[in-house]
Image (cartoon, rainbow, N blue to C red; front, side):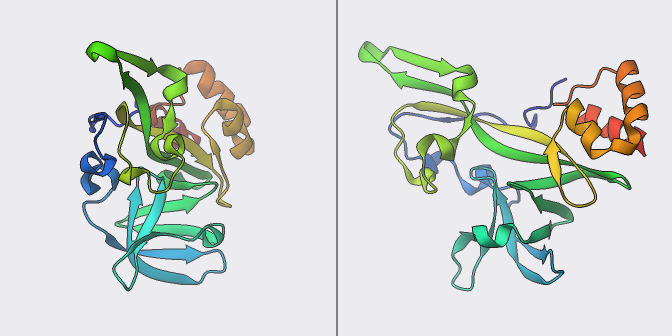
Length: 220
């Protein structure tokens, strides 16, 4: 079973001429039902606390400021983050936010979950339509519309969105690489022989969370 897409979530259809925010409600774009108390720990071991949530639409951690506005963490602060703790979940920042899935003494398994475009359908003459799927459509909603305020736009085509997971291996220095065989050997060099033996005996899908968990648990 391929867990590349979160199985518990349904696909989201935004019809032409709808405002995106009419469909992309907070329940669909945020990981938690409400902003939760969390802690941001920086590399110099200083920390700050705030009400936090993860946004699938822009793949960012957001917070509520003193004026009750919802804001993303400033880019110049992101690079100084060691980890973020929200609701017993741990996030890291390495060219984007990653949520820890599993930690063993030798390293970590993490994921990045986001809303991506699965299908674009332009309404045509006489109620006919043209559809675009596949690699061209595999992009985030925000990147496609080129705006941080994409959710406020009025959509001119039928858009189908889905939740996609990308997986990463991380070392104990908070450095992460996309989950594949080459990067597995880079992140866990001392386990090279064990890894090669395991991969010879087991068919590992690096897009499948269960396969990756079994692999890391075996490495410890």
